[in-house]
Length: 623
Image (cartoon, rainbow, N blue to C red; front, side, top):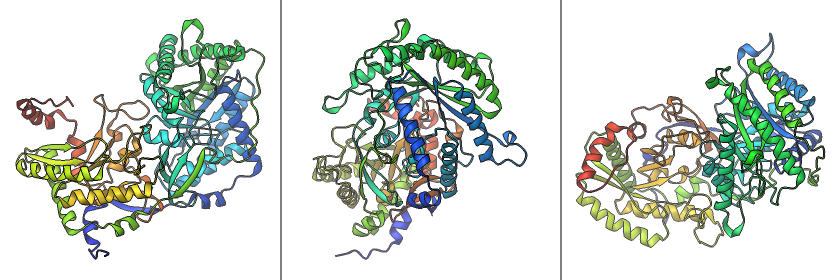
């Protein structure tokens, strides 16, 4: 029989740090408001072909992505920000048109970074304007919802090298760069291997509804290394390490990961392109040395785009994937300086041209969107699942009590340890319930000194042999995610009925709507900006997980005060009815989750726990 438990129990433990979820306009409505014509799509297809030809080594041209940043002072009298950006893009096109060996892409920087309907419209308007003026457009994605609004207009996309975003890359229609630090090329290589595989993940349909996305894998994904190191040998070493990691990592089923569509040995044209690319690479390193650390003007950042080298080597004996392009992030006031650098790069590329560019076969399809998406199946709305499997009064009392205890323990107010206990991935429902029953007895014995929480691993990392209970509940690669959501919620209810608090790690911004009311603790990857934003909106104490090293953002830069999840940074998510929305967070610095984030890695908060752990023969790592 259907439970008649009042909704108030769920309200007490869910969405406590969410101010509101605003309605997000469906992508199909934005397409209707801001449509693209046949000429725009023909331009997008041609630009994608040119980019793919460069990355695959079929062309000896060089890819140049310009990302200008404009401020109010860069606008002429009476000129809007959009017009100023378009004027600068037109100047860039004129500068690059004089050098046919260069392929230009412009990545517009939007002034409105707060998730909103107008921000999505503004981005689409900018990309339409670029294409209509003959400028190939690129974009950088930091979430899985924005691509639905603009992918049909892009010749290129950049995505951080995180697990969730690699699943997104596997379904993108355009050439895509997987970004990471030049100091960690192996991490980028791992992400490339994941992007080349098929995945099932949660996303949003063109109608703006939650859906289960099945991708085909992206064979043209390639590496983008941030912050070019000084000295050509260091960049060559990073490229070699990236290629080595790709060769050693491989893919399931015996396929080998590759940074572009080129999968055969380098032919003479490709070898010539490699030579010209590394000549340009030396020029790029000179640019990097002229940056802030070298005494040059600040604000000029260079990233290296690596193509494939499945058997070739860089000139001078350096192995690894050759440099196929540069992304230049600069302030608009530096445009004249950047123009001079364009001339230098063009000259370096010309010095190594073979004179015989191989044409890539034109694509027969005229569509530019969802080329690597097999299907988008309906996803059960969270409100339906919570009605089918409601939170009872006993669950609400347990969640509220354990959240308070965890907050006090993390803030050091009660002297208790927090023990997150359980396997990284749950495999058998009955075994989990049996384990929870035994854990309940142990937790009662140590309740004066330890707060025990059962860690429930519902989903595996991207690329794992089994996706986990949530994604593949039948373990047969049928990916019945709706059934996985039901089984996961039913399992959490069973654990709660035994009086054991539960913890889950979130890998995206959709699943919290299905389980948040049943959780006493949650964690996310500290290196993902969208997930860090999610944390500040969670109702329970939350941890930012890092692998022992200093915390970094997805672009390789260290986390700063600007990345504090307790600050305001709205994000794209879904409502309880499964509709895409913009989530606005409450600024509650006194919440347990905020304090948990503050103290989790501090030496002061870990000192008493480290001392206590030594007496039991355990070790607590340094913060």
